Image (cartoon, rainbow, N blue to C red):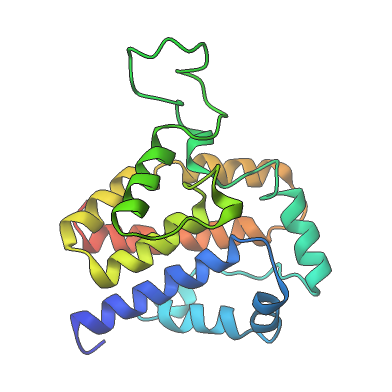
Length: 203
């Protein structure tokens, strides 16, 4: 890549595409996905970071919108919900007396309120279907894509450190579900991209 700006723009596009893949599949996304436009673009940008033969392969690809929606419903739509709060203790506040305060598996934990605060600070509206889960992976990735273009390096570094440590547990849950490997492969690809980005920003 020619400049730091080029690098940031490529990275931002990678995470924007990945954000779309974690949303419920609608016809507009499927249109780009079905002709391989999204995955080809993803690989093109990612090959600027890694040799093509070392990239995680996304091969278990849905063949119809209906199938993709079904795969989503059977994984990201419930059994492996990609929401940060679920994979962390609900709160780190040791003064909180709620019986589930130290438990995992609940929405609207500390991370959700942190993301909600960030969105409000940047005057970014939370989509209605994410009101109760602002720390959904699609939102986190859209924010990361935004920060890569508009935030200082220290903020990007901190965001990476704070909000993606749960992905190993999430990937394990996808693996345990069995069946199609599509979202597991997408997640392994995401982890590979985050590893590279983290090395760039010095975490």
